[in-house]
Length: 412
Image (cartoon, rainbow, N blue to C red; front, side, top):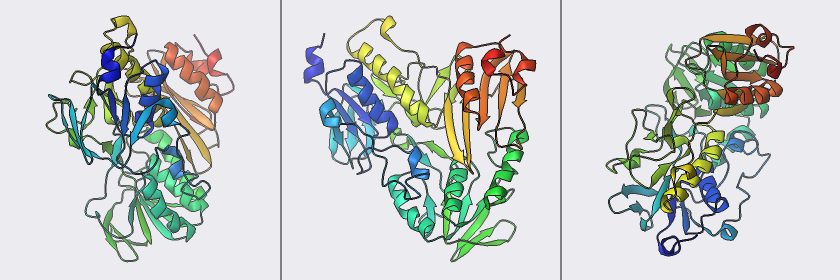
């Protein structure tokens, strides 16, 4: 039953119009919430999907990636170009560029913001790759076949380098660590990925950093000068939560909102979803901060259920615990790379195939239980492995290491 408060109150306000914020609004409607829903977006653009930005949109193969959602038909109000600057939880009020906004329940879906190259802020020719406006500034670089330096050999750096090489640009990737994807995957795997850069025609400089950006190029820490018409920075991201200072919403040391296992924050009727929130995982015995598309798609299902349960006074049985098997993918250098799970804490790693070949995968076990899987060009391994991780399946290491054996047949 819909209560009078649902119809007359300030309703649910969602801060952020990316995947997590938009899906939170959609899930509220799909799960039966009929009260007001307002989505506040800082950008002026119609809400859009981010993964295509570093691929089809960047290369000019698509003009945009707007979500195919009829917000009017859903009864969801969009206020775009409305940055939120502060939160007063005692009064349940947001301060925005368009004035104060009251809420009954609040969803924080502000995502993450890219880290900048120290000392380069405001420098002409230095770019980030996060928003539609960033892509609009970068497309002429690719169309002009310019010389590009990419700072950071992580997922974003590799994807941009892939697109730039496809466009015919000369590309040098600079990474401070001694290998690509440092801190993400073991060196035994990433050393093989080093060859991907060379095979694509991109130059990878590890154990180096950009010391200075100069007209016509950059200077590396060892004194080398590299020609560059554009410098693209992909050195990571942090939760976009600095505006929550003094709000009473607890933040973790990494800057993320400290959510619980239902994505509630430390303040009643304030929830968080997507890249801006970390949550405790019983599956992995750790607090996870997941900066990937699938998390922004799945988290809103739990958030919407818990908002409705709280606002309608539902019982514990109506609440939803959020403990996913994290998943993401990346397209780079002609390879489709997929990952499921969380390998920190694993006690064994097993290869399936040869990492020097076009397709292979690797599995991580803890006490015989499959906890994570990386698949390169082996989508069947990923699909089966993701289900086995969800089930907490115990696998036979000998069968698991045989790439000719289907993962689902490696059960012990």
